[in-house]
Length: 321
Ligand SMILES: Nc1ncnc2c1ncn2[C@@H]1O[C@H](COP(=O)(O)OP(=O)(O)OP(=O)(O)O)[C@@H](O)[C@H]1O
Ligand SMILES: [Mg+2]
Image 1 (cartoon, rainbow, N blue to C red):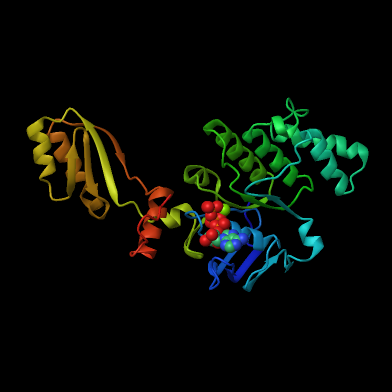
Image 2: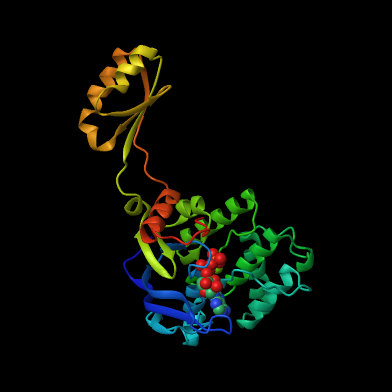
């Protein structure tokens, strides 16, 4: 259940990286403001280099912002009590090669001060949750990318955090692995965790997230639930079999119809008050109506639209993902 309480507030956040190669600085994050509610799964999406990882690192207190602030559970991220309530899955999780999954989780549980008995229970619970029971004694150097990613997530869960920060949890996984990771995130959400993640896999983001923020060149260019972002459907699609070619041409000539291709008739959503008249025309053309569908733009469509609108003068060669 998502409550109204904001557990993570980012306000006016900016980060300029200065280096030998860019003495003037690279503005990785630019005046970013967003809030995540308790129990919510919020995803930041955006092209490579748009500032997602930088934002997550600032939220975790791993790097400092140039300006702006982050508040977690009403306190500053530097507060140790806050950090104990947060779990983090980094973009490139580094795990000690000589450890097995079982040893790693036991080690981290020890750091959090759990008793030997509780540690054993916890390690079993976490290995089952991430589907690594059977491979619990495989050393990391022999683990596949997917196995490592699951163990890194298990590690992020050792302290039973209320807030989870996941930087590309499905990167490097095959489609089955991505699906399992998405199910796992869904399970964590079901258990009431608040989750802030970033990802390039928009179909999975669509599946699991309550709200999405689209970041581009360090700025939040769009934000909302999928329904809010997608807006109203733009078309009505009628699927009807059996129209004669002459009948189909007559349907295509109907003023509310945008086009006819085979069994599919498309009409503008703004003309929806004329749907009955189009359906009559389809039937007169010998068509049997199987489906009337009002498709909404996908997150991919919204993403591309938001970025195009924000950067009509896009750099040549810059990729949109
Ligand atoms: N340590 C650093 N020093 C200098 N510049 C950096 C550093 N880390 C990131 N940057 C720059 O900051 C910008 C944002 O990078 P960031 O890693 O936050 O993007 P991202 O959205 O996570 O990208 P990706 O999707 O590729 O993971 C990029 O231009 C990047 O080159
Ligand atoms: Mg990143």
